[in-house]
Length: 366
Image (cartoon, rainbow, N blue to C red; front, side, top):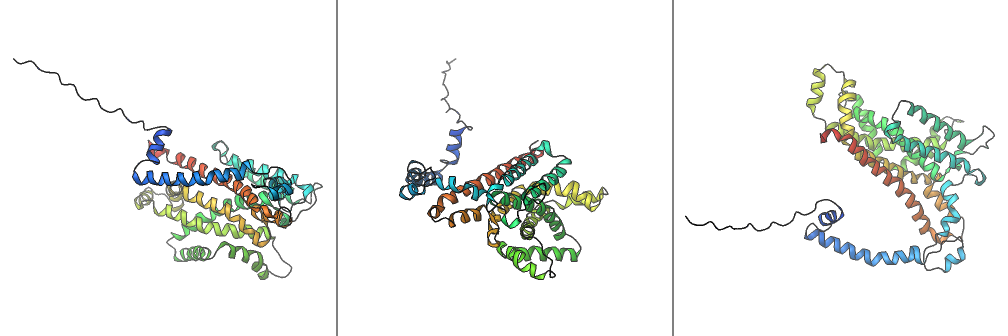
């Protein structure tokens, strides 16, 4: 009987770590040759641009509100923000009364944040919204409780941006829901009306809608009857956003298998019970990214109301600098300041959208 010789097995390579920062960089930035080349090219561009931007924005920048120093500096002039921030944030609202938009904006922001938390998703949240909006308009407009009256055409800056964005989003969603259901209706008259509305609104730019709401609509009203320009603009933005959102929701409705609707009919559910309990929960969960994208677009589109002499953030910034020749050359810094504000809000909405997606997809992970 011959002796058996032991042959050791060659050592296998250690498993590659698949979690953590290093693993993410290896997978996303250096996963293959094209990705690696793209990463190196972008890194080279950033290395060439970022040092110059850093010197301009920080090292050589002027931080004091001294326009003479800004004119002789080699870097950015952030002093323009310190000098003009109250006009940029509050627009043409009377300077001595700007505590009113400050309190109103903080309260509205607090309500928006609270509305995004599950703990506040109660029936009384709607009552809270009515109360906060009533307080907002009362304090901003005045005329009561000893407050001086400030017409809506003098509202501006961040309060106006938040008001237009939040109200238009809130009102556009139910309208879009009805329009999306109407476009899938079996009744030709309802389907045709909804289709004409969507195609008509989507066929023109928002500027045209705002122009019609602000200048053309009053011409069609009876003599002596007028609607506040803020209300007209808000209605125009709402109808415009609702048309686009309706198509997003309709895409989710079409993705629901027909068999589920037939099963609901077999169980004896009515049309509205089927939509409320089966179709809409699934359809809306599918299109959360599209709806949030529409919200973000609406928030940024509020900058177009400047054409109808309502000075939101962008318009207020232009108003602040164009009226002062000493600070007029530093518009880039002003635009970067309001761009940062827009980014904070839009990025927050984007991250909240990701959280919503995780919540609605929990059932699929079981």
